[in-house]
Length: 371
Image 1: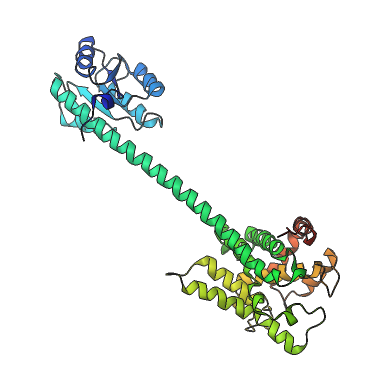
Image 2 (image 1 turned 90 degrees about the horizontal axis):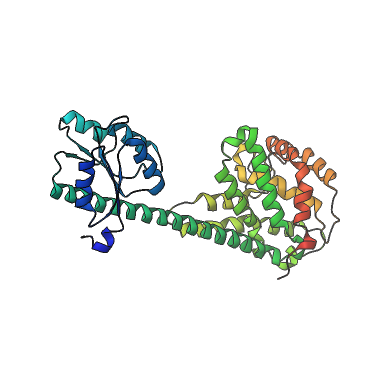
């Protein structure tokens, strides 16, 4: 890959040497192909490098005051100039001197007296290498930004799809309103509170909490399989009807499990969604459904959702009941410690209970979006 004259002239070479004849020689060799700047001592070289950012620096080693080694060290310590390639120009030919320069970050070492053809060839080679490095760095930055953009896009689509799928259950039952949005925010706030100081917090990492938030809308997705005569019944369900209603947990679990099987590898997101859908009606004492799990055998996502789901059902108005006051609902949640709920989760729930009315107001059924 040869540089055209137009490409080469875009490059700027900073030549640093205390001897005027050396500056004149190197400038005469390079100025026909590149823009050149000169400095006769280290401080000026550092200042010009920081201000103008040359593409390559030719640096004398033996200079009065600050020698070339110190100049190179400072260049490499400064993030602004660290990536500028440095070629040492020196009368020293000892291997130890060369090694010292290379260890400081120089890319090459040219000994005096200067050979114009060698100087031109070395400069051309290192500018090509720099050009390729810059291209790869820019390409890498572009790809990283593109990955981040696509990830955000996929995340937004995922969020929208989860809410849309969760809303399928709500379209079957107008009384549930913004239930999925409220419980989604309740469970995220609850998980964050527990994650602050509870032993359960070890598993509630920020990533897991975000997945809980994303998957919570699917907790009642199985209700799409419940007949209208049961789902929309205004009065109390019969024992037989309640048994059918309870199958929404299994229906939801199976639907998500079908999606998981389509993937090449398990995903934490769908696992959490499945656990929530399947186990949010399990009870701490083992009397819940559909599996009759007890205690820590109930997956943590299901235990978290159980508390917020019951709270929202209590404080929400339904065709068959009025809304219960916030404090009364908290009283029922407390009464469920050790029977319905995990005591550690209820403790965290009560600690952030003051936020619940605000979330409830923000996503009240009266503010439900029109289709």
